[in-house]
Image 1: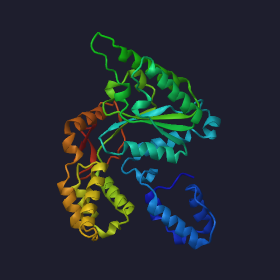
Image 2: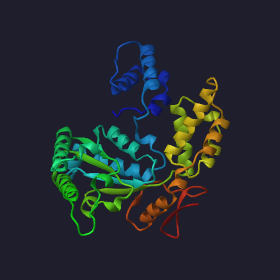
Image 3: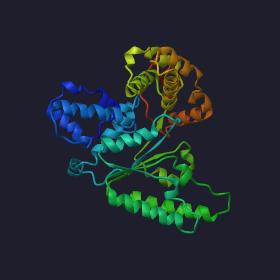
Image 4: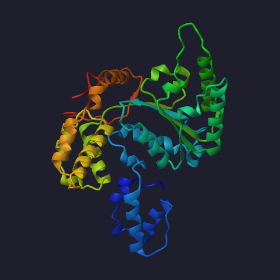
Length: 344
């Protein structure tokens, strides 16, 4: 059983659950199972209040049905039934590119949780060192550690900054040689290893990565800004996590004025609204707080307008698969002219 997210735990009807169901939930959280039903409920209520927001499930990923469907199918390949069916090896990984703040890190954590795998995030200091041969040694240590911990999800954010091609014209610098040698170790590992290591790389400038590395991934997806429907779900979910009832607020209006916002933009605006209300003697959060905070925010779509346009063009050219659900209507992602993805 995967670890329940904060949002799903808060949404549970604990009083309507049986003792067995309550204990199953507590077991997934690695909490004590002793006590009567009232004590079990109290323990879960406390867990819901204190759980960090960094525990995610598929349901926490809004507006990306094609990507989630792909992950659900891919996750099945790690089961014994897949080997019996005829699959000879585990999938090696997926590359995610897209708009900053649209949930790439959240997705990686959700996959590890849903697949009941360990999660390892690669930090720059794990792969880059000041001395000759450091890069190669660090990469060898990383893949050896991953194989020993498998099955495991290995997450590398902004991978192009660690593994991108940076040769300066015809000159081949020592740093380039070290990077290429480290990449060769990774390429060989992804090709030959079958211990159950699944790589999730993000790269906003994936064209800087070598064709050989890009070819190792079983899927390559572009994550766009959330559609109107997805923004409604994101706003409602974030309010629930912050112990607010979404029905107390005009979600339709908030979704409308947050057009062009990333998930991170929405989270920041909601937290700004709550900060304002809290500063004023911790008064209740009201609609006007949220509207004002959303109106003052500068959305990601404005800051990264050219970059987003370039990334959408990659989808239309078939270089990336669209991760977002395609919807039709005002303010949503739609197919225009037979292939071009645009917001209408």
